[in-house]
Amino acid sequence: MTLRKTPPDLLGNSAWNAMAFVVAVVLNLAILPFVITHLGLAAFGVAGLVTACIAPALVFSNALGLSTSRELAQRLEPSDRDDARRLFATAAMLAVGAGGPIAIFLLVAGAPLARLGFHLAGPAAEDLSLAFALAGIGWLCQCVSAVFISLFTARQDYRRIASIGIISTVVSTLAMLLLIPAAPYASTFLGCQALGLAIGLLLALAWCRGPMRQWLAPPALHHQALGRLVRFGGWQVAAQGGALLAGQADRYLLGALQQPQFVGFYGVAQRLQEATYIGILKVGEILFPFFSTLQGESEDRKVDLLFRSSWILNVLAASALGGLIPVAGPLLHVWTGAEVAAEAAQVLVVLSIAGILGSTANVFGFYLLAHGRSRSNALIALITGVVTLVTSAIALPRFGWQAAGWSACAGMIAQMATIVFLLRRSFNLAGMWLRTVHCVLMPLGIGIATALAVRYGLDRAPFQLAPSWWSVGAVSSVTAAIIFAIAVAASQLGPYRRACWQDIRSIVRRFLPLKAV
Image (cartoon, rainbow, N blue to C red; front, top):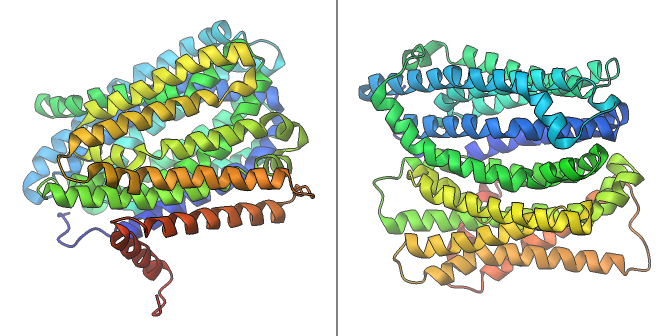
């Protein structure tokens, strides 16, 4: 398989990524009320804590997958095949040789450490050892499959990546429908997730056969390849560790300070916010291998692509996440019931604002990864994680569990400040501050302000929004459309209006091929 001579189909790749995500999020959100009804919030909270304990292992597997994808993306020519095979062999050896001991540690020590740190006891935690065993096996499958999927990522073959994700999610969801009513335990929920990850590994192995087989190699350590992976992956581990702190700090502290059901409330609110946020991230994920192929381009060209991509994704993120803010209470009510809505609505609003603020880092993070600047990514993530953790440690004991989420906002504000500082230092071009405001900050500010204004208006309206799917969907869609329209209109007031309008027209023409546009 050779390097493409034609430009990659960015919109097509984004569409495949978005399709896989939509299927995953629809199935995951649809199955969650079923899971909570049969497990109960306490057991669901225990499953969330087990997932949080597994999360540190994802630092290793995610960093390995990213570093392997980046290195392979730069070695697609037939003349690079031997070098690419050595890289693949080394990555496979790391996945098995380091991933195996990590999984064994989770199986042996996970349950005792969780009982000690989170004071887990009672019926909801009776199967904790089995839960950690199944979650650890699922993680190991994900770790090994990440190496094989990196072959598809390097070639920007998002059709196969999306297919693997869709089939894995369908298998996991069907398993939950069949098994959880018969065995309503946290371990059953985690075991169904592990089954989906195992199916994903088998699919990745099967699809690497055929023409791509010549790029495979059995696990082995090659010192030069190991050095390349470690140089990039070492800082990426630090970046993933910071992201772990930012994403799991509230859950860890809630587990240590509160009962498992409060972790369940937080998990429900976070699941909605994460689903929307990750959906936008998946749309832009294709920029990582794309930016990796631009090493020889001029700085002006790189900056232009970076900021235009940022503007598009930030408008989408502000619209999608902003649509959750006015309907947080009714949405949780119709989805999971009145009890969860009463407890978690305010947390969902705060987490949605944090998600909008956090969108600042998406495109810039892919750019840094593609150009091997893992140190900058690590700095961003560590600052974000430390600020989030410190804020959680101060706010949760003082204000209770509903203060969860404010720490995420504080961390994302720190992240935004760090990114703006790095942007100013990374590019020595005129007008950088104006471009940063126009393409990065303005869409996000418009999204937060507009969504809060709509929520304020609905709260003071003479009628209350009915907790029904049609009313929630209508208000959320109208809010997202208003944010999108205002953001596009505001983009026409600045010096980069022509580029913004051109990009909007290109997207509309691709997916709504109207000659009048």
